[in-house]
Image (cartoon, rainbow, N blue to C red; front, side):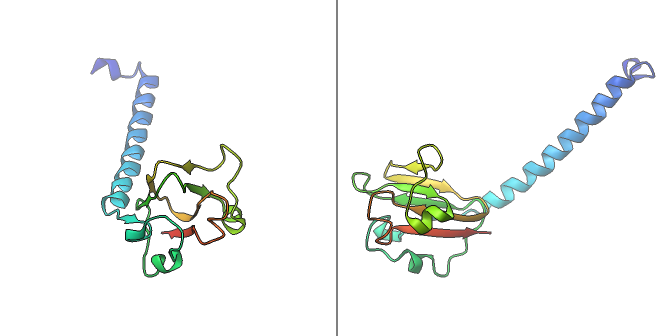
Amino acid sequence: MAAWGRGNAAGSKALVAGAAFLCMAAVLLAATPAAEAGATTYLVGDAAGWTRNVDYGGWLAGKIFRAGDVLVFKYNSTFHDVAWVSKGGYKKCVVSPKGYAPVYRNGYDAVALPRGTHYFICGVPGHCSAGMKLAVTVY
């Protein structure tokens, strides 16, 4: 106990600052599992998957997405991909220059959703303009 007496004010301040930091970290971490604990996984397009000739607007109808929910894109990677694009990229069916937008090509890609509106398209020429695009608002 003598080590934390009057002669160690700097140590006491560091201890208080460290405790405050740990409390803040605990608060932030406690909030995270609550959002993810009830997370729902959605197979985009249900049985049809991520492909052409699917009404993704209809697929979205009635669904409410929450932060932490997961979209699973299942598709034939020989013919399709999934690009997470900006609103402009979604509207114009354009994938951002290399390195600016994640492009998935595995054929089975799981994407955890943060809050906000997110836009996905198939980057293969002609596919997005034919309807392979998805805009998801996450609460």
